[in-house]
Image (cartoon, rainbow, N blue to C red; front, side, top):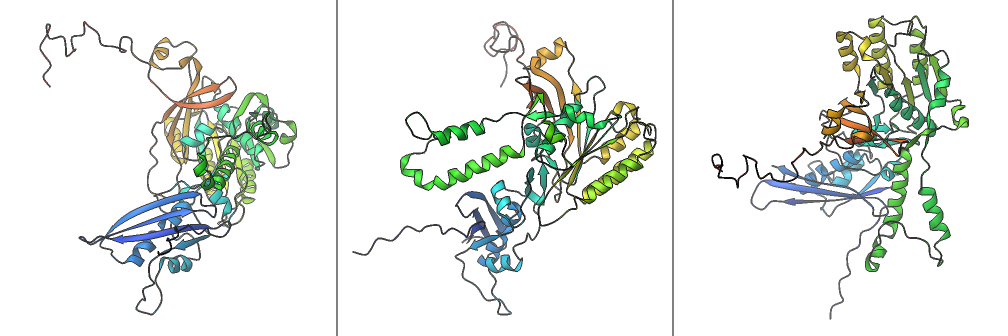
Length: 479
């Protein structure tokens, strides 16, 4: 009897190098071809996949080369390509294969595509361009820093985009914009990212004392329980249990997935608004403060921003360390330059140009009610990401009947515009207005608005004239 054929096994790639399996197929009846690509890391963890159908292309080598667009979508810089396509000879005698095309690109992204795949942070960290703490790579070559609110990061597609200017329109009735600004600043300090803060106060460093501390995570407790084990001596098994016959296939994957979850949690923290940030973190040398109160011009603030941004130039390679700029109430009446509308617009334009060519993010809050309508529109147009926050009245019975969970809301957050890079595809959010709530009265959460059920809508009414069954009164419904 012939020896049984061995089951084909996936051959892993070297450590810290991704592997892409590509394949192509040609239609028998039409002039069409299809290509597919599947990417995994050296542990076999799934990173992304894509499949494309091309009209008029029937060359297998060309199809598999086109499938390499997945490299751009995942932002890979070091990878292997596995293909079963024979190497056809070109007219000049050279070999034209997906491997050769990838090698000819030097392992660099040939271009950015608006069609993206969810790439894990493990892939980004295993590339030749390591990222610093608090920086997450995204599609289209984008890099994000956390806003300090995990829900807001998810809404914006990853966080605040490096090289962008984020503007928040303040509410004149309540200082809820400070909740966003403090979370943004506290997240940067926790990640030990350089911070420049400017505010309309004589001693802006005193504002740092109001920054919240991270919520104590239960991750350390879970790790301690896993190390010490349960009462019978066996370590506790977190997460979902896997059937014994499949356990050998998921051992490494579960470990990598756990590491990925840890990295994801470290990117954005929940902050306890009741506890201040530890004092030793506030005394770090990478924190700068500037007072805008009684300042006749914006030249000093512009010079400080220029010096700060010059220390964080945009780099295609190397460590993507990020800087944060937080400016509170830029056009506040207590500022000496208040009323100089064109000077403030010129400052925002200059800051936007400097930030665009750096690895920094600038967050500016401004009371839009003190600006004229024309200049308020200019400010909004200059923002890469624009948001507004509105406080909720203490007692609004009509609104309480309309929305569920009204008693837990502290305000509304409206996202007007989201920054994007290397893409012409507009960002379309599932919702633009969110409720701002306090979880356990200490951490901020954002939720989509849900309309409360109308009285009597839970069931059919016997006296309803529009009921299909009540044909005695009125005309019957004609379907």
